[in-house]
Image 1 (cartoon, rainbow, N blue to C red):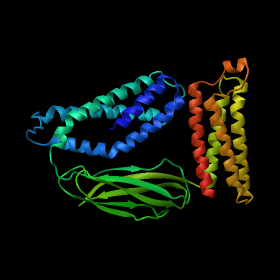
Image 2: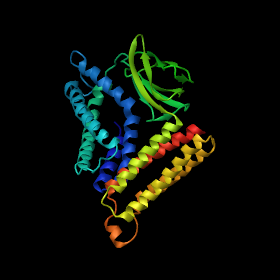
Image 3: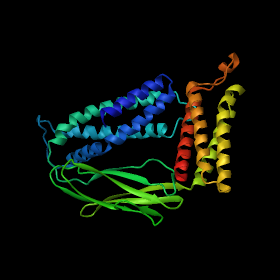
Image 4: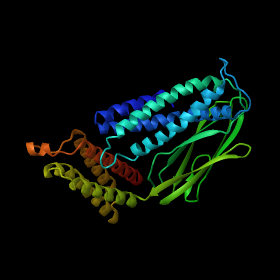
Length: 357
């Protein structure tokens, strides 16, 4: 955990308290990034703290205090915070629910307080953890892969960070990528590195899926023996499948907009952009069937532009004119949901457009 995490939680807390759920979604993204950036260093500290807590015999820190209270309390608080992290990240990461819970701002504020308290516990435990020299500990690593789906023949970058959580012995590691036959590894498939204590290094594997479907690639981390492995699932779709999925989600979004008690004028302001985007997608599918190779990409760009206009309307709450219409505008939570779904559809179409290029 870093100050970036606490800062992101504070901003998210403020956005939720103000009812600004579009800003809250942006802060949620920053919160994910803050956790991701801090993960390798945080895991290294946790591994060392566990090692100290398991050590036999009295261990006395620089100020003569036993490590039992400080380190054990840190690890105990860490378990509580991780549970709260998981709950908050699941609630925020999957998009806002149909109706924003009034308890969400409170739960985020509580998580921020827990993170701040954990930071204090970590500072108290740090002298005991860092004053002990330990041999190389099992390597820690994290894998970063952007959420799919991906397109057939699209190059995918799989980034990994490995590190040595100890500080006394050199750790010789190799990181190997195993992929099925339908996935080409276009970079080196194995990396080797020797890490001194507390050192870390990042590696990137480049892969290209040749067929659609769900492909599983496995990262194997080895020292003198296998230390760990992680299997990553990658969803891959053809151009036609990407367009079909985007169309289905657009139609679902349209149904959600029309199935509200909002005024008809407000609905039409939004559905006009949705309908225009659907028309462009229908033309793209027709162009594919008729063999017009260049046209589908142009139609996708036009559809993306229409969805961009929809996002602008949602952000401005542009729901039509007239006194009666203004009384029946979309709620903040509705606009937040529609914005999230629209952005996801744009990502699908951008992936499909890349596949055509």
